[in-house]
Image (tube, rainbow, N blue to C red; front, top):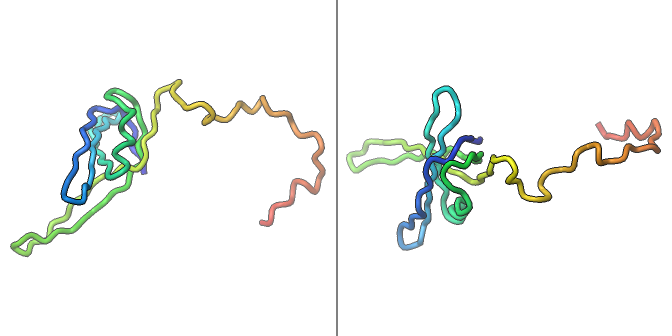
Length: 124
């Protein structure tokens, strides 16, 4: 799944526990009739993905929905959801990394040596 919008806030990396669990949160505001402020958390080594981003940038974030169950000391079961990011992409025009966009189709020469049998070589 993906969420698109402009970065509203990027939090600092937080470290928890003796094993050094890391978490960093980003809030993205969607651009629709009723904009939503979606908080996405990046964990462990994925926290570094946010280093090159800043507030106001339009982005697309690859997300996974996570859910957990917890039973409190009184025996009541509670459920919690989180949105976990695993990829982030800059959507600003002109900021694509070189070599990531294919050349226009008119830069390729058309094939001249095709035979009728070349068209039906697929196994299905």
